[in-house]
Length: 418
Image (cartoon, rainbow, N blue to C red; front, side):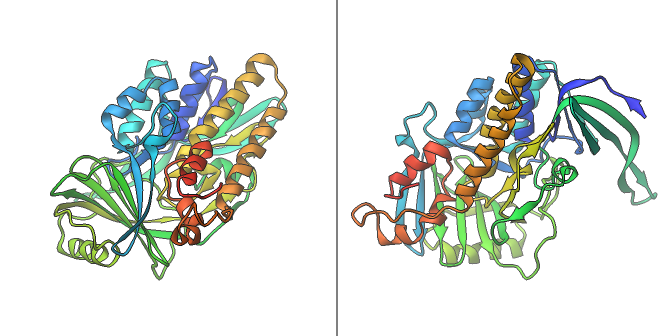
């Protein structure tokens, strides 16, 4: 077994939250190593929406300007049922530096973060998988497998990943930013408890025949939610909640292949199904469909880790929680967790602060998710909210691209107390 140089913090997982965590640690002068079992950043077929507070965090890290230039601004969220527009919230009214949400391809965001890490002298170790972690009083020993892809067969190669080499490294702390199927969380034996029924979505990215605008439109039918996210002036994405017969056993992993063929663009069945969804859920949508770029089915399962870590291993982002996709809250709150965890580790490693800071991190963010996932709206006064809003307050809260004080401020526009 080969030995790697000791590091102060090992970050497992190089998605957006993991990369931001590693970048902030490095900018605070903490020696950091980051690794991911995948071979590269996320594929082109995934987009994300950054909350106003997340854009400010990226600004503090030095990459907001490039992100804003690459993305599409969202100024408001409109709520619909059938043909009727029932309510709206206006992000432009938030008293913040960036009063809008920002939609951009996840691959673009990760490229910006990886470039910033490289400028800071940090290389992402792609194709490295955590096999085990052994916690000790003053650190942790991580066993890492370096993966290699091999092909077998002749006319039609069959590719598979195998372990090329086993490595060992010492770290003062390990951070699990490795998603819903987190290896770090499983090695710690922390339960990932379900907080709601799985949510399945049929997703369509399309090229539209006219301007897609700057508003996210959310359809709240009695038994399903749907959302339209503009991605550029002419490109948008629809996600329709469906009820399939079979549940996926695991949360679908993100596609790392930039040129993945999911379904042939413009295929007749896909276009027919999309039009059927629009007819049933959004009869007001009259933007012509020029092309279905791709379509896929994904599952989201609301879950919360019983704790956010212990001793020398701690969790951030989807490794600790998962919720529905409409408000895109899991990743964005993960950014805030990264900031708080990095601040705690910096105090401990550089200023000899007590490790009780990490227990405070655990309780603070666990309680925030308990409140968000178990949110029960305070009944608003009749003159502040419509009956439609009062009956759907909990669902509305999970569909707004904001958290913390920003979420409270936006809900207050509807007369909802949070």
